[in-house]
Image (cartoon, rainbow, N blue to C red; front, side, top):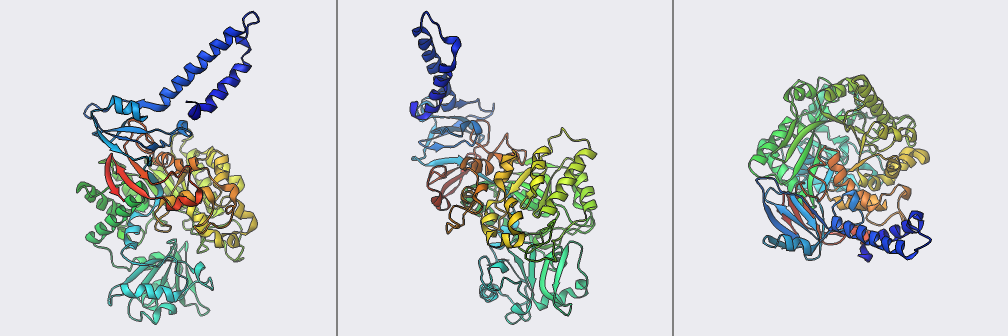
Length: 608
């Protein structure tokens, strides 16, 4: 007891020394005796509360099995410095009791037992910002991540080349090239003179086409769309690079995926998630076509994941996104359609649709993030506003009116300010000051210092991706300069203002593995351990803050904190077993910890 609760003893002993009411000049021994009884009684009560938490199962559920001989982290704030050893799961796939080995084994001795063999158990990880179908698609295409030149990209593409079929892939990043310049259509033309080639940048906010694609697009490329840019040469001809909304022109030309192809991609993505301990993801931007694919897979019991879908809300009120990746082409705006359909809540406890994904600006890597002042490395550029602010307000307002959560992509400080101003206007306009809206800003990457407290004032959730900081650190300061960089990727600044952080990866922009995000959050280092001490280390998060960001706080960001995100009775038994303790091991070991088992709804869905 003293080893586990020594701090409690010391705290209570200090209270005793200051408790003058217990002192009695005629009998100095009696108060000390009483105090010892009080201290011991309180500690025994605390130990009981800390080691055994039990609730009754639902009427039609019974205790099913025990997991024991583990180090269990619940992710609940009151258990920050406490671990447990065992828990009980019922036939409905929910936790019934959490406690120590002896009391659980004695009380539930008749149940099936799973020996964790001293390993480490955590709530299933929740990724607050993903692109599930895009992940699955990327696993069927050439992997361009990490390529350091256009010639390396061509070599990776060649095995996937089929004459007469569009050659699609993603993952390139010009910042890794020696010149750090955008590639051109000519870089692709020699290898693919007759095949349309369309390659998305790593962040999905720019794409690269060859001359065949440009010829197919024809006159549609004569003018840049609002919120997009077609990079042109000195003669005004497209170079092959399309940024943000300009990509929609080409996306609309790409042949749509078949139903079978979408099902295959979805299964590949789900399998990848299970492998890395993800039991739930927030899918940041899809439509009813993909929602239907999910429902079909759930109905066939081929969906070992929980998904919280954000419906993609077009940046143009009348023109939906392009049809690539299953986006539909119906002229009816998504907010009109879904306000008629209504929210889809807990479909077989796997799928929820109750939020909208909106965009206000581009990305820092492609210099499309909207900044209040020009880019430090591009003085004539302040980025792109993807949606006219008045239109953004009116559409976001409609989503909120019909009960949907609004989650807006904002990366630059100008983009973030527009979103904050718009959210404030919606709250005031609809008189929603006391409503639990849980409005979110996705990325919240570069935020002016005076705007950070506004998140807390409006209870806005910052949905951030720790690996973006370690991936972007090579160019972020050159884009932003020495002043703005100090409130970029500023997790500690948010936490100091009591802003809730929901953590994610943005896969396939980054890798799926949430332990890479965990490592980035607590160290601010890349996988090479650089820079020493961390990149702007004053913005580091603690391990417990990070654990909550990938579990309980992520659940809160989806209105699911009563069902998911921690290991306590009545919640779904979504948990993982890790090979090492990420809360105590040397930080350099965190990225290499293995997920040994993933459980969803109390059932084993992955084992190493």
